[in-house]
Every structure is written in C-alpha cells, then in structure tokens.
Amino acid sequence: MLKDSEMISKQTHELNYVLKKYNKKQSEGNREKMIGLLDGFRKFDEYKPHLRKEFYQYIEDKSAFDCMEA
Image 1 (cartoon, rainbow, N blue to C red):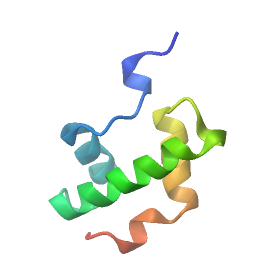
Image 2: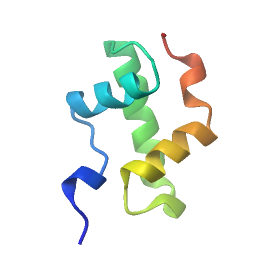
Image 3: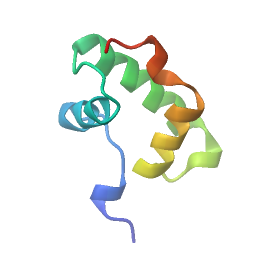
Image 4: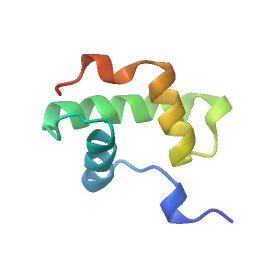
C-alpha cells in the first residue's frame, strides 16, 4: 500500500514544496501552472498511480519550469 508521503497533491504546501525544490518562486501564478501540470500528469496513463517521484520525472521531461518565475 502506498503512503500519503509518496503521493502528489494539489495542496498549497505541496505545490510550494515542489516549487522550492526546483528553485522557483512560490507565487500564485506558479502554483496555478503546477496545478495545470498535475492535471495533465493525472491524465497520462503511464504515470499512474500519482506518485511524487513520477511527477518529478514528468515535469522534468516536459521542461515545465522554463516558463515559471524564478
């Protein structure tokens, strides 16, 4: 069984953690972009269940942080 700590969520503190991990500003705009990425990630069958480490790979594969505030 998966632990909650292994799963990715849309909670503000979770989004801020990911932004901080990638040296991006913890702003409302960046969090909204992260939610969009998370929605896309959840639709992508290859990455189910929605694990944190797979989400990190997904956003790195998409170069998702190139368009976010540093």
